[in-house]
Figure 1 (cartoon, rainbow, N blue to C red):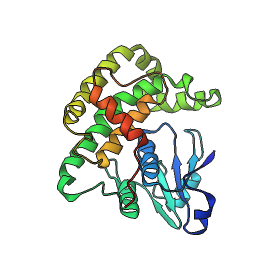
Figure 2 (cartoon, rainbow, N blue to C red):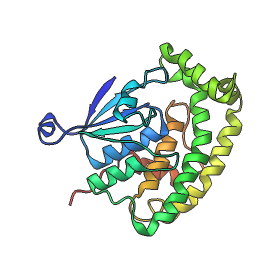
Figure 3 (cartoon, rainbow, N blue to C red):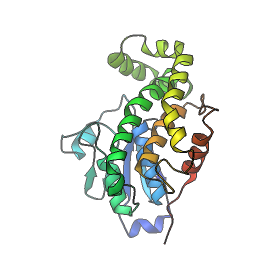
Amino acid sequence: MDCLVGPGRASAQITPMIELFQLPHSPFCIVQRRLLEYAGARFKVRNITVADDRAEIWRLTRQRYYQVPIIRDGRTVIFETDDDSQVIAKYLDLKFGLGLFPRTWAGVQAVLWRYFEHQIEDVGFRLNDARYREWLPRSQWLAFLRHKERKFGRGCLDQWRQQEKELLAELERRLLPCELMLADKPYLLGPAPLFVDFDLYGMLGNFLYSGCYQLPARLKQLRDWHTRMSTLQKSVA
């Protein structure tokens, strides 16, 4: 399913429209979607499912990549080069002048995004996936179940659902450092958002995707931060 996002049609005559190929619930896709929204870009969403043929993505990347997200910007196709790269985000940062990767914070951000994408995502996706019947169309249940069980073992989704209480407690524990970072500033590293803010937003977006969960009530600063991040728009000079 395709979806247009951003300003009116007139702008399409000026610059090519960016296309985001995504799984809507993927934390990594949510990061890039939110960056495009923040930048005020006009973009087209190309939704796929776990059962879809990835032939188009394979073709666009010249047989180098078959995962999502990828972005097509005119004739340029951008995708990640390894599990810890941020090629797409850095491309969007440069294209739209977002200022999300200042050299001063390069090392700190590299440490944080790895923590978010491994420690936070690892718990959040299990909670969301266990609730797949509540957010995924019935026609996709079998493909989703098969995909997950081939990767994590038979009965994994039922197991995660049974472990819900423990997983929620573990997620709160892993989010506590973020709460402490936000105690005296509006964003994780200072007065303005950097890439790690959008990265954490994406990981939490996956956790919250089913609509069955909320951020821990005790993490008030994190909840306030999430509200800001949900509507944040880049300032126009």
